[in-house]
Structures are given as C-alpha cells and as structure tokens.
Length: 256
Image 1 (cartoon, rainbow, N blue to C red):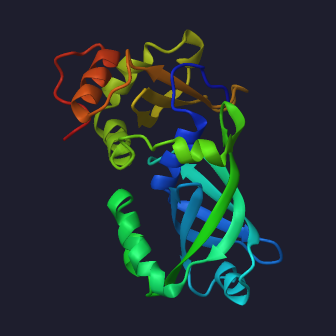
Image 2: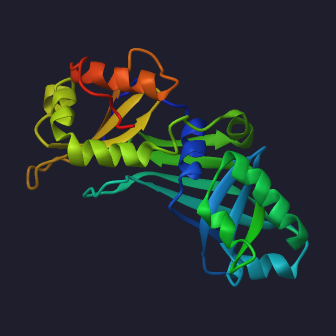
C-alpha cells in the first residue's frame, strides 16, 4: 500500500498513541509461547504491561531476578470493519523485569491519571504487572518501516485525540458517508476509483483507506489529508474537518 507524504505525527508519537489505545498486543520471550497483553503504558523509556497472572511471561519473570530479553508486538487496528483492519504494527524491544506485588497498586494509580483503562481494575484479580526497560522500537505502516530509539519514545507525547478517535471514526463512517465523499474529492484522481473509508484522525489531519475494486489488480492504499495547521482541541478539529469537506456551516464534527 502507498501513502502520500505530508504533515503527520512523528513515528515516536504514532507509537505512543497506538499504545494508549491498544486492543491487541503480545509479549514474547525466548523459549515460551507469546503471552497476551491487555495494556501497554509507555513512560520514561519503559513499558508497563498488564498481563495474565498465569501466563508464560509472568512465570518466567517470577523465576529470576535477572532481566529477560523481550519483545512486545502491538497491532493498531482500525475502529471500523475494513478488508484489512491493521493500520500499523509496532515492535517494542527491551528487557523484562518483575514489578513487586506490593508496588502494583501504587503504580496502577499513577498510570490511571494519564492512561485511564478499565483493565487496571483487573490488577490482582487475574492480572499482574510487568516492566520492560526499552532499548528501541520499530513501527511498520503502509508507508514502510522505521526504527525509533528509546530516547525518542521518552520525549514523544500521544495525540491529544487518542481517547475519542475510535468513536469519531465510527461515527463518520456510519452517519456521515456524504462527508467522506466530499473530502475524498481532494484525493488524487488515481485514488478515487476505490471505496474510500475513514481510517484515522489526529491533530495533523485525517487518514483514509482506499479499498481497491476487487479484481482490478490494484492494492488498497492509505492517504492523508492535512489540515491547514495542527489543531489542539475539539473546536479546532471540527472546523478543520468542515473545511476539508468544503462545508463550513455544517453542524459540529466530530459529534459532541
């Protein structure tokens, strides 16, 4: 898939944002089956994981105080049904460490202030916490793959709309298909032959997945339409989306 090059979040910011809304992740260590992860919180060069207390990764961490080489795989999926739902794949590399049980609750309370998640309520009730000291990351999207250092991840911040993006994309796709059509008129002519679906929203713009007509030999493509300038709140976002659609007087988008 090809993606146009324009203003966009940095690779480190994209990783931070994807981890904030993770729905599918695994942690792998040598000699054991990958273990599912329900939450990935990045902070200060570390990844704090929520993981089943009976998983292979937890068992391995409990058996030693030595660091264990580990890789976390995060799959960032679109919030709507698409022929190919994956937006990006992320691999976080580092060393796995135990989190003492008596510190888990305090850490969870600190994490919840920046990363509210229902999964934190499972801590101590079938879920436990592990820590990965990060050495680096790789993100793969339709535009290609890129390496990101642990220092870049530490400096990066998630997109301000990460918590609401899924609802907004679903609303746009199900209730405002006419606006998607209007915005798609800004796409290159070669990308208007397939079915255009909303894929993602961030402070820089909106992304679309163009699903090629079956049998024409073309692949699905991702394309971004940039706002005139990065937006900082819902009011600015609404105005920027209306401007892209050429409808300055429409009711507020996204829905509030």
